[in-house]
Figure 1: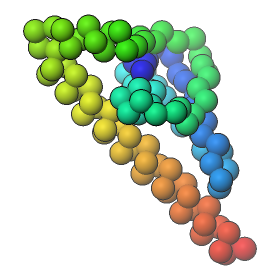
Figure 2: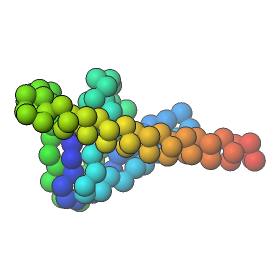
Figure 3: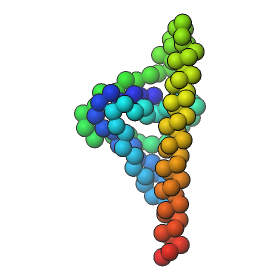
Length: 106
């Protein structure tokens, strides 16, 4: 899981309906869903500009849990991950519905 401090990343999702591109800007987290859910990654990510990103790996996640407020920090990271996942799901759903509408109209 990465927190993008500066720069711009581009994530691309290869879907049945086509390729969906997402721009990830500074202050945004990426890779949170596969990290938190321990599932396979679904996107390819490339730097659009020079970036500084902070990586949270499983060892870091474990160390956070050992902190005095570790449970609160983990809960906030989970909340943030769910919020971003909801936003991405809405984007992918809109993309899918748009491509279905275009297919029907043709």
